[in-house]
Image (tube, rainbow, N blue to C red; front, side):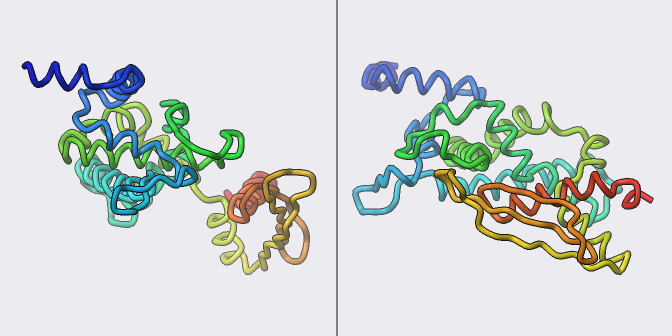
Amino acid sequence: MGLFKKIIKSRSKQDEIFFGEIQKIIGFRPSKLRNYKKAFTHSSIKKTTSTGKPLNYERLEYLGDAILSAVIAYYLFKKIPLGTEGYLTQMRSKIVSREHLNEIGRDLDLIRFVISNVPEQNFGDNIHGNIFEALVGAVFLDKGYRYCERFIYRVVIEPYVDIERLEGKITSYKSLLIEWCQKQKKKIKYDVYEDTGNDSLKHFSVKLYIDEVVISKGRATSKKKAEEIASKRSYYKLQDKISM
């Protein structure tokens, strides 16, 4: 007990506040605060360990991604006993999609903990999902699989996973559109070009052609995102035909 009090006293006031906030999010007392601090350290800080290894959330993000995928896979395996491999894989992809993880990261307001040399307004949307995965990795390193599984059930599965709703959710409008064009023997083309204009961040624009006709356009900070925006707009224009 005396040692525990000594550890508590050795923490700074800032660490005490961080400890309390993390405890609220994960649902139990964190043991190794350094793991959680690392989960919110951006690579732009260029922080390193005493041996010169990078000290940021990227490796934790990789670990969290793997643990999250395993927990969700096991949950679906038990929840849907008649689900085929393809169906279960598709459902898992929807739950751990970048869009879904970004939503969870935003809802938990994890961005407030990030230490970075990059202004917050310059972060892409994926920062929210990335740091959520890093947090999952930190929980795993700190407490092990059982605690991490409990955390994922509490913040992902219970509030967000509705099997019926997810069945109808489209995770990639581009994939859906390409598949439809292939079935209909139509030619689809994405014409992507840099379109930064007066923006401080690099932007890309895309024109989506179907049978040489421009159906929609999209613009975003990455080629992939611009293509997805254009695909989504095309989908809604052609929805009646696609759903036939």
